[in-house]
Image (cartoon, rainbow, N blue to C red; front, side, top):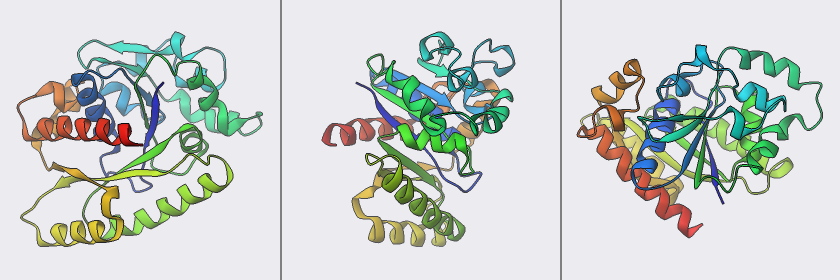
Length: 256
């Protein structure tokens, strides 16, 4: 039965999509069956997995409106080694259309329930705002993985996210919890980043993943080739860090 995780942070530009596709590729590398759900209308996780969002016949938009199933809409990324439930600009319209529908925040949960035995992990790439799309992701997830840069403003955004998760936990999804905080784009030469990292560890304890993703040019270049960094350059520091993170994720899930 699949474990479902949202990769979320209400601050933009912190590497949510990079984390989602590279964790997925890392998990596939260590023998896990993975589905990536792209809930961002920009469709970056779709493109970054080697699937052209402009060519999608069925997408997560159709799944949310219940006009098709996950099995019908998913596509397999041959190069990356996992399945993708893709997104494109159509998804922006789903925000408006979902408002008047029944079970509007549980549509994705219902759809994924039918596919839960096909995967070990489902990773949901959430948009940076708290929208109806993000709410659909949080309502069906067992937990949230929070990628964050070790900078002052990141701490501000984190407190907002923790409050959001508490509200969803209390009102909509009692299973929801923070699985862990992932330090990304980390540069150990910068004193402030080390200070913020220490603050995170002292405040959140074992909720901070041991794995740290370094600032890495190859990870940044990979999306332009339509590949996760783990596949684009498996020998890079960033790729090694994400495969280590995937192994840590499997261990953490086994102890849940």
